[in-house]
Image 1 (cartoon, rainbow, N blue to C red):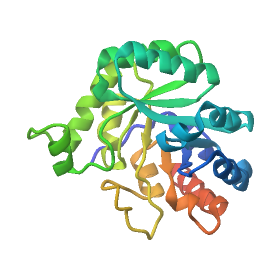
Image 2: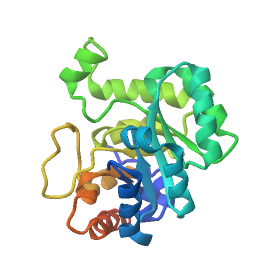
Image 3: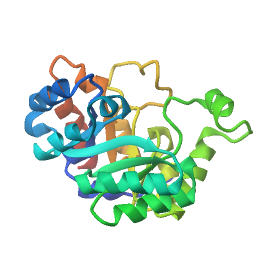
Length: 247
């Protein structure tokens, strides 16, 4: 196995490299959890369910509290529509947002162009971590293409269109880094805590230290931290694992 090239994560503090998925029901629950994390929280990921219920007011509340926001809505629409959506996220001050690489080069280019008005980074999602080979072929690509090859193909498309980063499982980090080079950020969902089994809706997972060792820049953690007896301590454990691998 070849050595993985270091990416932008090498320049980030450990707390900036952990995106906590706030998969809760309400803004009140999200903001209460944010308070429990205190200064240990560096990046909050807001997904579709919470966003549909609470919208941009919650995003602004996080930003006003000093927490950086990863808006994970996985835009996949015609280029002009995606460009307009990205403009609104940029104007709000969102740090990262996601688009589906499968939306094609023109859509990604519009998203990146819209992001130029601010500091928002556009991340292109390759293959969802919930999909194994059978599910990928059944729903997305009924060919002999493997998941790993699909990740590399979509990553190349996204990089060619100017995406600032890529999203894929930790199992494909090295393939992603080969495509992304040293300057684009690689984000890995599907992070499970040590000693725990993969959740039923994730099929390609790794622990924090494994993913960091493979070269992930930003790790997405959800239930393993949010549902821990002491969420702040669990988050510090993840950050510590990253720091130990990076030292």
